Structure formats: structure tokens, C-alpha cells
Length: 453
Figure 1 (cartoon, rainbow, N blue to C red):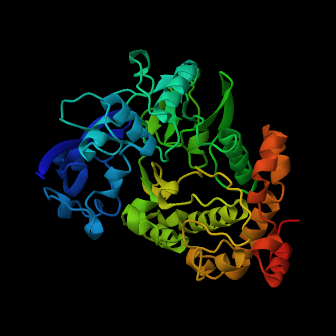
Figure 2 (figure 1 turned 120 degrees about the vertical axis):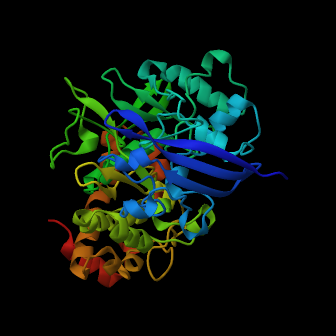
Figure 3 (figure 1 turned 180 degrees about the vertical axis):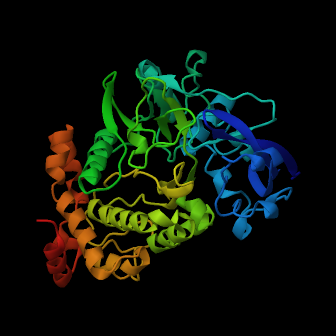
């Protein structure tokens, strides 16, 4: 089978507009990327506001080392992680394939990269030439009923009528295989809309909203979420945390939570670069199955801004504990992300996303990622075996577990307040673990003592 070389161009979104950042060369064979290289543009490197497209493989700590150099992905990977994160997710690929009327995963990666659209997650765009214009894929909230119809057709493998082809743009790139699209509300705020799927065992939109609300009650960083009723179907709306609003040419104040900013007056929308934990850990999808939370914590120590390392590792430990309590085993590396804060010019853990409880009857449960010395075992004793990897001493780790336990034991009240039906609560209740189910008697006593009054 013949190999081809495809030359593409990466653009970075800086202060409201895209600028050329560099040249990407892909060596492809059918639907496989065999190798890739990247060279930063000389003008881009001269910009005082430039940022790295991949903190592991395309770092910009030493400009002289990278100027005019064709760089290769770290760890022998065929594609740069930062570029891979700008590609469409599993659902976005289905949208593109439906437009091309081709089988699943049959297109070259270069096609997926080009057709993901300029509204993709993060602050990158991939185009076929320096003269290519950006492509818009964001629709207004009043288009949700049409998007729902399109999502249902794609989910069923049906042909999309011409009148519906524009409603998904080129397919979003925000993680996961569920039907989704980016939409803008009447105030100009950008949201990710997640639609029902034919394989849903229960009301996934309400379950995810209630679970993320519960996570916020545990002290975790969560973007705004809500459920809309669209033609009788529940649609989950999640605030896009890779966008924020601020004055043109100015940095936000240190105490501003970027994903809580809103359009107002002369404020402009700005984009935050995004990479997944898969990129920071530096592995491929197959190897990712062997990775663990302590390895993400290690990546945080290497790549996150020094002022945020302790806080980010504490948050990560709390998220791991939360996933244990709610039986969320979809906690793979792509479901942990990082954004670049413009104030510190450093990477920080992104808000929490893609967390849904998984009901089950098994007493012994596993997470997708490794937890501690006992592998993937979803227990708090296992979590405590490597608390030092998260820069926490024993008492600090116990305090985190106490906070998460204090929040999650209120799960039924939070679900009811969020609008969950009795039927949904009955279906998900086996996902929520009691403290005694996931901790030894001695650890139970220690957590109870450390929990907030």
C-alpha cells in the first residue's frame, strides 16, 4: 500500500484571531499515520505571546534549539499529542464520515484534522494552506432541535439530508463518542451540547448534570452545567471551559475564574490552549490502558506552572476519590485535561468533565486508570498507598477523602434538587458506594475524624 506525505499548517488563536504557528508534515498509509514532523514558523517564534502546541514534544523553553528545526514527536509516537488533541473525537469522526458517506475510521488522519473545524477544542486550527480561511461550526441554541434530529440520524447510521448537514459544522473535538455539538446561547456564551444516544441505559444528561453538581459540592472545579428539554429529549449543556471573556489586550485579574466569565460590554471572547493527560503523560491510546493517577500527578509536577502544582495534585487526588465513590470507570487519560492560563503562561488542570456514575452489583470494582499499589482497585485504601505522589502527607490526604465523602454521601439529595426522577435515582443508586464498602475499618475511622464537621 502506497504511503503519502501531506503538508498541513497549524494556526494558533491569539488575542481574538488565528495566526500561522508552523508546518505539520504527516506520512500516512491509508488511515494510519506512520510518522510526523513539525517546524515552528520563524515569525511565530518572534511573537511575545506565542505558546507551545505540545508541552512534551514541542516545548519552547529554548527558542534557539527549535528555531528552523523539524521536530519529531516524543517517545516514538507517530503523531504529536498536542495535534492529536486538536483532532475530532469519536463522535466528530462519525459526523465527518457521514458527510463523506464512508465507513468508520476509513479516512486519512489528515482529513479528520482538516475537517474538525476552527471551533474545535483548545486554541489550535489545522488548515491545508497558509491562505485557507477558518471554518465556522458553532450554531445558535435555537438550532438544537435540528441538531437533535441530525444526531439521531448519524447515531442510526442513516444518511443526513442536505437541510441538516450544516448543523454540526465539521464535528467538535471535545472528547468522547456521545452525540454532541458546540452551540452559542442568546447571550453569546459557548456551550457543548450532548444529545441522547440510542444505547443509553438511563437519562444520561440528567445523570451527568447531577453528578457534576455533586462534584462541585465536594469542592471540585466544575464548569456550569444544565439540562434543556428539546422536543421531549434531554440535552446536556456544559459551559465550554476553553473559552473566556475579557478586555482586549488585557489579562484577567488573578482572582477571576475564567470559566465563570460572561459576555458583557466591550469584552471579547478568547481561547485557552488545551491538551489532554494523554499528551502530558506521553503515550499512545494502547499504552494508556496501563497508566495511573500517580503518573498524571508526575506529569503535573513536570509541566504545570510551579505555583499550581500542589493545588492541581490535590484536586487530582480528590477527583480520583470522587470517581471511586461514584463508580465512574470512564476516567481514561483523554478525560483529564489541561489548559494554559494566560496569566501565568503555564499549564493548569482543566475543570472536571465527562463524569457519569456506572451502576453495578459487584462489590469489588475497578477504575480505568491505576489508583495505587493495588492497581486499578477502586478503594480508598488503594488510593492512600501513593498519597505522597500527589504531594500530600497522610493527614492532608485523609482530609481530602473526608471532604469527598462528606459531599458524595449527599448524592440523593443533590440528584433530587437537580431534577432527577425517582426512576433515574433507582437506576443509578448502585453506583454510589458507602464509605464502609471502599475503606478498611481503620481507614473509615481516620476519614471520619478528618471529615469537615
